[in-house]
Image (cartoon, rainbow, N blue to C red; front, side, top):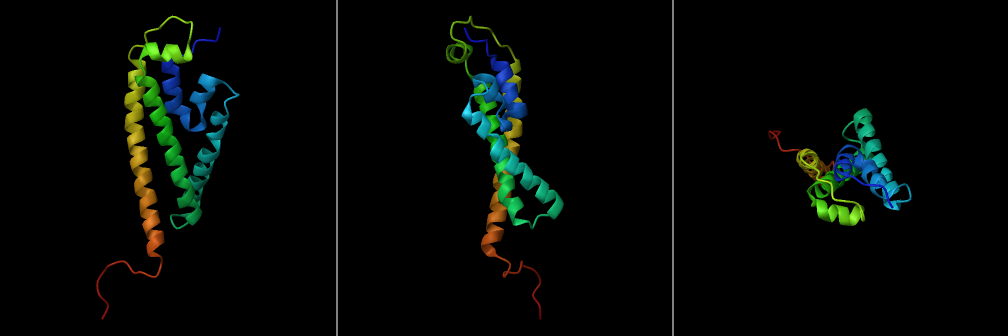
Length: 151
């Protein structure tokens, strides 16, 4: 019989380290290929964040890589919300067949609340940053920003 997999631990693992696939490692083990794939875009996004910090906002590679980190964080927050709000019976049928149902209490609900707050901020920031950089790239350097007219 498989070991018991807690909905609370899964939700908080997705919240804390979900961008690196910790929740998938917890649920499916080290053989889960999707868990290993989480690290690649997250690491690329972290490289973009470091480049942005060291080279400034005009580094094109940074603004191409940084949204990957935001998207990975957003998807991990979504996973935490889905895990936390899954009914106990459905959770046990999917992840704990043969085990009795354990009531989870408020800990998964708190994980869902925290994930919704963080995920909303991260996703909004990612869309705003990527949209701004995309339109700056589309306009190109040849256009001047609006300002006082030169005479």
